[in-house]
Length: 369
Ligand code: F6R
Image (tube, rainbow, N blue to C red; front, side):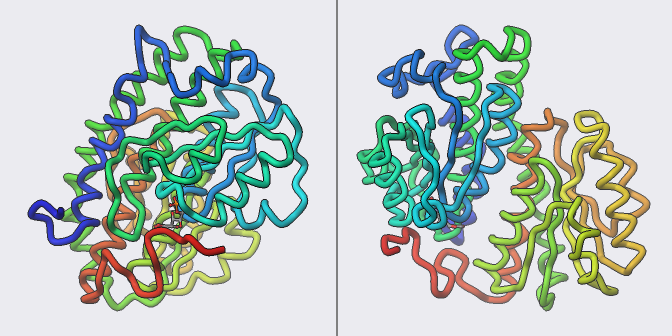
């Protein structure tokens, strides 16, 4: 039930600190990541993996893209992320030492289910990241790591997304330990970052009124662009997807570095552009590059809304609006930066008088190919 909230989405957005906390709960024991569901696979199997292929659709695929950066960094193993429906029909190279990780909130998405079945037939090992106990995809997989976001009712995925990243990060840290690629201090640091996320999500949610105001001012907007870099890139695409789904507004997410390779031609006076800005502390090389992207689009008249770390003063002279997120390690910023984008889409939908829980033409679980 909605429990006093005006929509399921509003409730589920607010539940994100719990979704992350509940997904972590019981999985950090004496400073180590423990995932009992994976015990069956055995450490030898995890050690022997040479490649990870993530398959998912929509928002779940963006969670996979975020996790790619973390898993490659921590476990030094190549990770590719592919849309399930593309993977299934292109004769992918799968070997016994390829691990296929599917991500699905519902566990029933037909495209992803077919891809998992195909991967198994080819002899790959499969694990599933899923939010629904006993769903079909986990049953068809060798092992499952459940996200504990609780039931997600609104069609647009929110709390499941942050829970998916959380579960994938736990998996990545576990993998890194088994493979010996992450030392004690580094593990402790990453775990502390992860455990701090729920409280920081609470702080980000406190900014929601400002984001709502922005959305109400922008109710007539016809197109919105989103830019991000590194882990901010999938967040830009997720922000665009939320806006398309909920507010029926044309939106696109780009990698900020790609701007000069084409998309900058779209910038005309008044064009709203959200920019997910990496932390100046955590990403000393990328931060100035994104700030200069902001300058470039601003010079062409873009209306810039920056999502930036608290205290980042470099964006101030060039951004029309700055939405602050708390300080976090670079890999943990996406968990925070996505929230204002979800809220923006939800509020814009509300401002337009649309049904945020049941957008037109969409179903919560897509059980046909
Ligand atoms: C976006 C959204 C969809 C789903 C996608 C996968 O808000 O809800 O893009 O993320 O259809 O669904 P699951 O995770 O159930 O496989």
